[in-house]
Structure formats: C-alpha cells, structure tokens
Length: 285
Image (cartoon, rainbow, N blue to C red; front, side, top):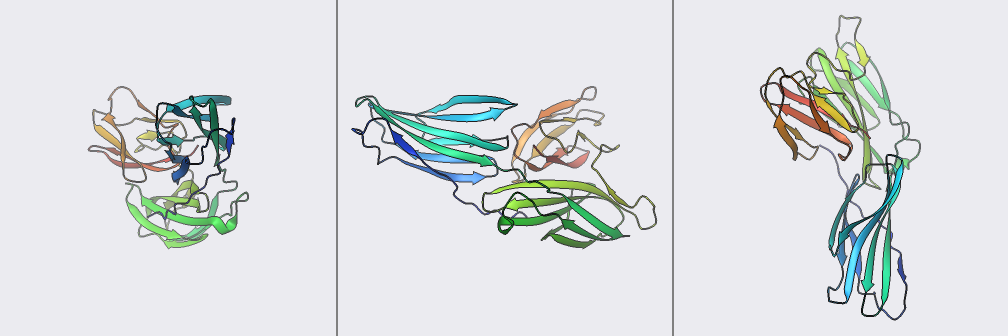
C-alpha cells in the first residue's frame, strides 16, 4: 500500500591522524535507510594490524550518550528514536603503523511540523484535506490516505493532499494520513476516528479514544501500551507495517499486558488477539 523510495543519504568525512597510513581502500556505504533505521556496510581489510569499531553520539530522554556499539563488524544496523541530529562513526586503527582514521555520518531524524488534516462532510460523503508540512521541502512530500473499518480491515486507499470519499456504510472508521518525505525516506502519521451516521447529531470527527471494544490503551502511543479488556487467556501477536511479526504472547484475564514500543519506528501496527479480532495501533514518537 505504501510507496517506498529508497535513497542514499550519507556524508563521510575521513580524518587521518598520521599520513603514513593509506586508508584509501576503505569503503563505507549506507546500504539501507528507511525511516529511523540505517544499515551501513564497511569494507575494511582484515589483518593482524587492523582494528575497527563503530561509535555513536545520540540523545536519549534528555541525556547525551557516546557509545561504542560494535567491534570489527562489517555490517552495522542502527535505529534512532529521537528527532534531531545524531552521529555514527567508524574508527579504523592500524596498530602496526600507529595511525588511525575516522569516518563520520550525520544521521538526521526530521520533525513534521503542522502535519494535521481537517475535513467536511455530510452523511457518508466526506472530503479530507491534509495540511502542508511547514519545515520540509514540499517537492519531496507525498501524501497517502488509509481507511479501515472498526475491525481493522482495509476499506480505502488514496493519495494527494485532498481525499474525497464516500463511506460504504454507517458506523466507525479509522482514517489515517501519511506524510512521506521521499527525499529522506522518513514519514509521519496522523489518524482519527470518524463516526459516520446519516441521521445522528453525533456525526463527525472524534479523536481516537478507548472504547468498550478497545484492547490497546493508550492509542495512539509513543513508548508503551497495554493489552486489556480481553477477559480471558488468548494468544496475541503484533505485526509491523511490513507484515513482520514483532511480538507474540498470551493475555492475562486478571492483569494488563504491557508492550514497550520506544524502539519501534513510527507507523501503524496490528494487534491480533485470538478469538477477539484485530485492532490498529498508531505509534508516534
């Protein structure tokens, strides 16, 4: 459903502490970058003289950290969950010659200011309009719309800043808008629930709030949610936007099940509970 355009976004700065070493044969590439996930590949000659390791500078919960995150690993996978600029480094040391070099990669996670939408509608006919993100290049932005029924089934998909849609029946529908920046392969979502009733004064737009059928609370969320209201022991699993199962377990009839999501990328996830159905969860850091 989503249109992904992979791109290479990396800047390398190599600094040598001693000119007698030749590091020109080292090749470091950004193999994959999708949302907050980065995968780097390093081509470094492995011998008894050479050692290399990865380091990262980042901010977590208001604190700044500088960590060594991998020794002699040609493949480095790194995920950011905070907005702003972090840095990934590859340091290569030649112990025999007594020199080293450093490759520096600025990694930027962008904010999407003013990423909201409004609507107008009557009965089952609605027009949705996404606002323009104010702090990013509009030529890079692509807008996608997703509509799901109360059971989480796909109902409609469209693209563009304006989305005109006639709902197939009355009831509750979840509507999500995705702002996708194809220049940096990052995005954000904003979703709400529509109560579609042709003969009710309650027709209109309401925020996603827990209801009698809700099993995930709070929703949307950032770092955690709880599986509740299952009234028994049921097997559950959680699926990410790519269709990969990322969590499985069993519900508890007496206690809520806590799911930590701080390291999950932004997006829409599915909670599937055996015998109870499927529910959409929106992660927004």
